[in-house]
Image 1 (tube, rainbow, N blue to C red):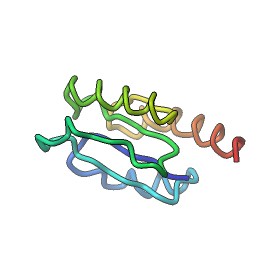
Image 2 (cartoon, rainbow, N blue to C red):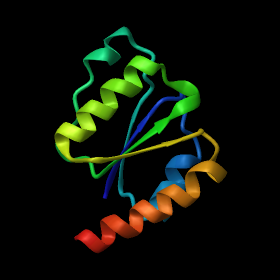
Image 3 (tube, rainbow, N blue to C red):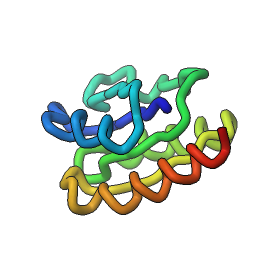
Amino acid sequence: MCILLIGGDNIGSITEKLMQNGFSDIEHITGRKKDAKNFRMPGHIDLVMVLVDFVGHQLAKVVKEESRRSNVKVVYSKRSWTHMEKKIQECAKELAGAE
């Protein structure tokens, strides 16, 4: 499964925890660059997680529109693993069941 994290400069140990939950391909976009408004959803993404405490409203809006267009689930969370964990586990089960 492939997840795209949007927001935060450094995702650190979150990568390892995502791998433990079944995500083998982890991509990260900081969302700080000015060209973030030109964001386009990569075709191989299974799940998008927006780290809301590190992303501006405009980028969040573009991600939401792109995820709808691409039919990719998007979830929102703080950067803390305790906030992310339950959402990640639920989504991983859904994605594993869909395959």
